Length: 145
Image (cartoon, rainbow, N blue to C red; front, side, top):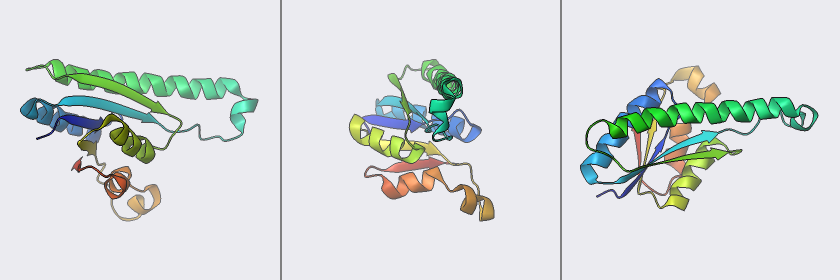
Protein backbone atom coordinates (compact mmCIF):
# COMPACT_ATOMS: atom_id res chain seq x y z
CA UNK A 1 0.00 0.00 0.00
CA UNK A 2 2.71 2.51 0.97
CA UNK A 3 5.73 2.93 -1.28
CA UNK A 4 7.52 5.89 0.31
CA UNK A 5 7.15 6.89 3.95
CA UNK A 6 8.43 10.21 5.27
CA UNK A 7 9.37 10.14 8.95
CA UNK A 8 9.67 13.53 10.62
CA UNK A 9 12.21 13.09 13.38
CA UNK A 10 13.80 15.39 15.93
CA UNK A 11 15.39 12.79 18.21
CA UNK A 12 12.82 13.26 20.99
CA UNK A 13 11.09 10.44 22.85
CA UNK A 14 7.87 10.94 20.88
CA UNK A 15 9.90 10.98 17.69
CA UNK A 16 11.55 7.72 18.69
CA UNK A 17 8.12 6.11 19.09
CA UNK A 18 7.15 7.42 15.65
CA UNK A 19 10.39 5.97 14.28
CA UNK A 20 9.48 2.48 15.51
CA UNK A 21 6.07 2.80 13.84
CA UNK A 22 7.51 4.11 10.58
CA UNK A 23 10.17 1.40 10.35
CA UNK A 24 7.56 -1.28 11.10
CA UNK A 25 5.27 0.08 8.39
CA UNK A 26 8.14 0.27 5.91
CA UNK A 27 9.03 -3.37 6.62
CA UNK A 28 5.42 -4.51 6.31
CA UNK A 29 4.82 -2.69 3.02
CA UNK A 30 8.32 -3.01 1.56
CA UNK A 31 8.41 0.78 1.41
CA UNK A 32 11.31 3.18 1.21
CA UNK A 33 11.75 5.33 4.33
CA UNK A 34 13.07 8.88 4.41
CA UNK A 35 14.01 10.24 7.84
CA UNK A 36 13.66 14.01 7.76
CA UNK A 37 15.12 16.44 10.28
CA UNK A 38 14.09 20.08 9.95
CA UNK A 39 16.38 22.70 11.48
CA UNK A 40 14.37 25.84 12.22
CA UNK A 41 15.65 29.19 10.94
CA UNK A 42 18.14 31.08 13.09
CA UNK A 43 15.93 32.67 15.76
CA UNK A 44 17.92 35.88 16.20
CA UNK A 45 17.02 37.69 12.99
CA UNK A 46 19.49 40.44 12.15
CA UNK A 47 22.08 39.23 14.62
CA UNK A 48 23.53 36.63 12.28
CA UNK A 49 25.31 39.30 10.30
CA UNK A 50 26.68 40.92 13.45
CA UNK A 51 27.65 37.64 15.09
CA UNK A 52 28.46 35.05 12.44
CA UNK A 53 29.95 32.75 15.09
CA UNK A 54 26.52 32.45 16.73
CA UNK A 55 24.89 31.66 13.42
CA UNK A 56 27.55 29.06 12.64
CA UNK A 57 27.23 27.48 16.10
CA UNK A 58 23.45 27.26 15.63
CA UNK A 59 23.84 25.59 12.23
CA UNK A 60 26.45 23.16 13.55
CA UNK A 61 24.26 22.21 16.51
CA UNK A 62 21.35 21.54 14.15
CA UNK A 63 23.51 19.32 11.96
CA UNK A 64 24.74 17.37 14.99
CA UNK A 65 21.21 16.88 16.29
CA UNK A 66 20.10 15.72 12.84
CA UNK A 67 22.97 13.20 12.66
CA UNK A 68 22.00 11.80 16.08
CA UNK A 69 18.31 11.51 15.12
CA UNK A 70 19.20 9.89 11.79
CA UNK A 71 21.54 7.41 13.54
CA UNK A 72 18.66 6.30 15.80
CA UNK A 73 16.46 5.60 12.78
CA UNK A 74 19.31 3.87 10.92
CA UNK A 75 19.83 1.51 13.87
CA UNK A 76 16.15 0.57 13.80
CA UNK A 77 16.29 -0.04 10.05
CA UNK A 78 19.26 -2.41 10.46
CA UNK A 79 17.67 -4.37 13.32
CA UNK A 80 15.81 -7.20 11.63
CA UNK A 81 14.84 -7.18 7.98
CA UNK A 82 16.62 -4.29 6.32
CA UNK A 83 14.65 -1.20 5.37
CA UNK A 84 15.77 1.11 2.57
CA UNK A 85 16.57 4.39 4.33
CA UNK A 86 17.42 7.84 3.10
CA UNK A 87 18.14 10.70 5.46
CA UNK A 88 17.41 14.34 4.82
CA UNK A 89 18.20 17.59 6.60
CA UNK A 90 16.24 20.70 5.68
CA UNK A 91 17.46 24.01 7.06
CA UNK A 92 16.13 27.56 7.33
CA UNK A 93 12.44 26.67 7.13
CA UNK A 94 9.84 26.04 9.80
CA UNK A 95 9.25 22.43 10.79
CA UNK A 96 5.72 22.38 9.38
CA UNK A 97 6.70 23.81 5.99
CA UNK A 98 9.80 21.62 5.80
CA UNK A 99 7.82 18.46 6.44
CA UNK A 100 4.91 19.24 4.11
CA UNK A 101 7.13 20.52 1.29
CA UNK A 102 9.53 17.57 1.60
CA UNK A 103 6.68 15.07 1.44
CA UNK A 104 5.48 16.67 -1.79
CA UNK A 105 8.95 16.95 -3.31
CA UNK A 106 9.87 13.35 -2.46
CA UNK A 107 6.54 11.89 -3.55
CA UNK A 108 5.89 10.37 -0.13
CA UNK A 109 2.53 8.70 0.30
CA UNK A 110 2.55 8.77 4.13
CA UNK A 111 4.00 11.08 6.77
CA UNK A 112 4.72 9.66 10.21
CA UNK A 113 5.25 12.19 12.98
CA UNK A 114 5.39 12.05 16.77
CA UNK A 115 3.26 14.14 19.07
CA UNK A 116 4.44 15.44 22.41
CA UNK A 117 0.90 15.13 23.75
CA UNK A 118 0.73 18.67 25.07
CA UNK A 119 -2.64 19.97 26.16
CA UNK A 120 -4.24 23.03 27.68
CA UNK A 121 -2.31 26.28 27.87
CA UNK A 122 0.99 24.61 26.96
CA UNK A 123 -0.48 23.51 23.61
CA UNK A 124 -2.03 26.93 23.05
CA UNK A 125 1.27 28.72 23.68
CA UNK A 126 3.64 26.28 21.98
CA UNK A 127 1.33 25.08 19.22
CA UNK A 128 1.53 21.67 17.67
CA UNK A 129 3.68 20.84 14.68
CA UNK A 130 1.81 17.57 14.23
CA UNK A 131 -1.58 19.32 14.18
CA UNK A 132 -0.37 21.83 11.61
CA UNK A 133 1.14 19.10 9.42
CA UNK A 134 -2.17 17.20 9.49
CA UNK A 135 -4.00 20.38 8.48
CA UNK A 136 -1.64 21.30 5.63
CA UNK A 137 -0.58 17.94 4.21
CA UNK A 138 -2.03 16.58 0.99
CA UNK A 139 -0.94 13.03 1.92
CA UNK A 140 -2.09 10.94 4.91
CA UNK A 141 -0.40 11.67 8.23
CA UNK A 142 0.04 9.14 11.02
CA UNK A 143 0.55 10.84 14.39
CA UNK A 144 2.26 8.68 17.01
CA UNK A 145 1.79 9.59 20.67
